[in-house]
Image 1: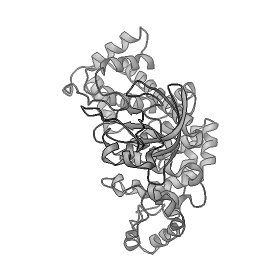
Image 2 (image 1 turned 120 degrees about the horizontal axis):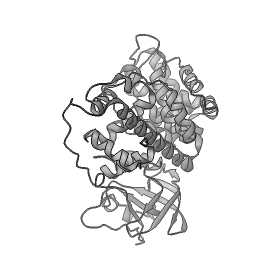
Image 3 (image 1 turned 180 degrees about the horizontal axis):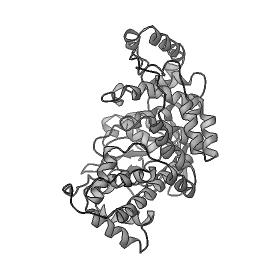
Length: 436
């Protein structure tokens, strides 16, 4: 029997998800800020088809606009083979162009692409104030219809076959991360791609997008300068006067230093400051508060040359060592900007998060073969409930032996994303069929 490969997993995944939500489409209601961040990072690719059949290839998304007007300015693209330079506007719905007043606003006359995610039953066309038609791109899709969940327990796959399924899923997941990372490199360069990947990882599951947005809008070069810490906190929207009233003397002293820098640059950055509702603060451990994680991101920017060197040396241990050495006189003892002292001195980045960053930010920057060999050698963190649940889904009972390594955990997370409510026997049949 030929063991399932990443290609076989991708084929089985495609076959079993046929007619479901297209992979790049955002689930449910997603803010325009999140759409902008994901597009800017290359998550939706760079090869698009226009609503009138145009062949579109994005060369560069340009820069985030700091003034009223289109979202991205100075973008470069090939449209039907012709190189174009102009702006890009991102909307949730095709009708937003009219409802937001862009058609009568001359600031939008240089827009070369209108990108949106929902198209009503009746098509809406995009035109400028001088009645020029603008190519449209719809990146959205329909919502999926999920199969009925399996009942818990019962006989499933034996551990050998389950192990093969997990390994194929892990290979697919790593390949997808590598492709996404290389796409980001092509769009913004290797250093910024790595910085943004690290920022996303520091956001955990609840704040990945606002951390990505902050890193994108600041950029590594500016974040690494003397004023970088104030820039990151300011763009995140964390430098609010109310924190001076909540904090103790130490907190107010730290805030005062940030403010003395931020007020000198704030006017030029005001349009890029994230709104408070972009962040999720509830149900987080104190050490994982977004304020504290932003302090860690500032530390990453300051130590980036050492982090990059570890990546270039392909040294996971050194990569984690650099992250573990990050320190801050305020954040080692505080959870947020409003006092919130920690019970004891706490590392900015813990061991489990270092490993997660190595898997999601460092390994995708290596060649696929190198990344796979290193992933197989890593011991995973303590298995979470999602990972344990997937061993039960595969085998009918929780199997700790199937979720000890980082490779196994990555595979189980991918299976959770793709096949949780499918029959694992059916998944196995599709994998073996596509393995030839």
